[in-house]
Length: 578
Ligand code: BGC
Image (cartoon, rainbow, N blue to C red; front, top):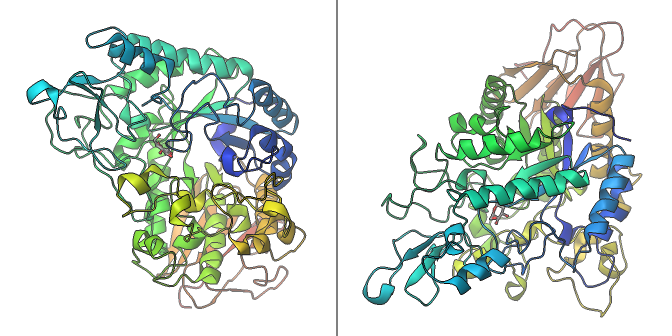
């Protein structure tokens, strides 16, 4: 059972479920809410505190469900509102909270409001809920300006009467006009609709995109941006980082979220929210103010190369910024928009991950063992940090990206809109393997012998939940142990200092007595334990060995050191001399 706790989100481990790829109960090859519900005991046993459900709303799937037809309904292919209620009931009974995804920048072009806007014609109040503009040139044959969409191509779509509508993403995702009070009211009602049902919090999609200044002629200010993680920065950072960019991170957006906070605070306990805002660091904390959403995703760590100094810098910055507004940090290494971190860390330094995807994973060569070793070390490191951690489904299995999905099966709009020059994000959205063998590796029954829409590779079974469960060296057991220890030993209000030892070793020194040491190098370093300190969990199951008084920390490994009960004096970190 969950216990009343207004601050649960501050240090929660949140597991992101991408419902269509999680578990399927009907055999149509698409994951559904029944599948989510049936696996809640698995998530509880894994040890997570909350589940974040990516969109399950009715959708034509022009953008994986982030094109929403109706914000207060469930896609019939995924289930019904009863299933959501069932998930809420079961999750709460199992002690987990539930967060849902809200997509406020745009609806789908099948949303009732957008259909009404098309039918009502230029100048109507229905059109004023979206961003329609007269085209340039004769009969408005040219787009209003040269803005390009994040997925490629023009950000404007003509509707045949000389006017065009704005879509920062796919043409099937028309942008709302947030200066219209009706739009604001509608989303307040959407928040209440889900909060009334018992939803505990919200993940706010493209939070930095809502306010726009259409009078600003900044040319081409939005364009597809491929970050160093090789997939998509869900939105590029604004060109102007002072709140005056025409499309992103405008100052007016904060007034919108202050309104949301008032709605979230109507509830007891207040509902939580986390902003997805790809903005420069100094602007991010604004979204996380207690008077707004309360928390914001911090992506710099996700974009950091495997390097102690880069991690240290990102961590320090995140901690400082979150503390500056009374929020807590958010640690993320994978999600449905980026190449899975096991693969990122397994590619050679500086590798162009987009080109790697386009080569079907052939060039350069991915070192999967190394990638997994580093991924486990990085996960254990972020779990040692104060704040909340967001895990993405399948990372507990150490799943790598699937780079060789047949081109004919790709679904991401990035693939089509980039004219086949970028594959996009499907490689992280392949249905999960639950069993080692059998139909669809346990993802769901096989109704007609066909593959799932994004086919699972033949090697998926070896990484399945079944294959890994009870193997003490497996990644899933490592996650279970890490989450158990985190719950048992870490105090919510703990502070920490980040200490670098030489080039390769990073220490997280927590005020609750736990130390975490990560060796980013290849060469083992000696660990000298402080009096009263014992080796606890390690991301390398074979070393260092608990109980060893002169342990070594292997390369690319994180170890947690615990107080054995006698009281620790922190006098030592990993040997900087190696
Ligand atoms: C989501 C993406 C989506 C985009 C447009 C992002 O924040 O995470 O998956 O394509 O928003 O809705």
